[in-house]
Amino acid sequence: MDFFQSIILAAIQGVSAWIPISSKTQVILAADALFRIPFSTAVAFALALHIGDLLAALYKYRAQYADAFWQFLQPEHLTRFETEERMQDARFLVLS
Image 1: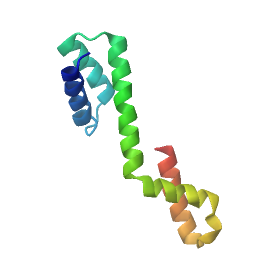
Image 2: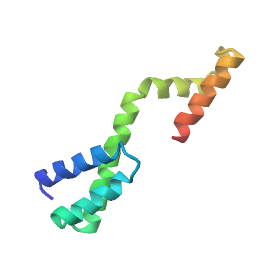
Image 3: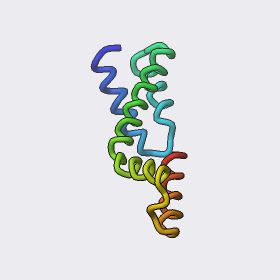
Image 4: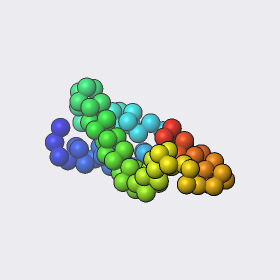
């Protein structure tokens, strides 16, 4: 896979990540249809792109993740209402 192919497939993943379809599948299908890239290479590339998605999400929401982490360690510093609300936020972040 060359640099041009990588850019095209990354753009397809970036666009399809925001609509309710499997972006990984779109990248794999596009790799096969457009460039005849072998399936195993396309899957590996799609997974690598998702690692980038994960890192971007962790960076964007780093303050919320840090806050949720500290709430798990020290929930006694919050009022009952704050604890329930923050624990719900923390559960959502962990599960998502």
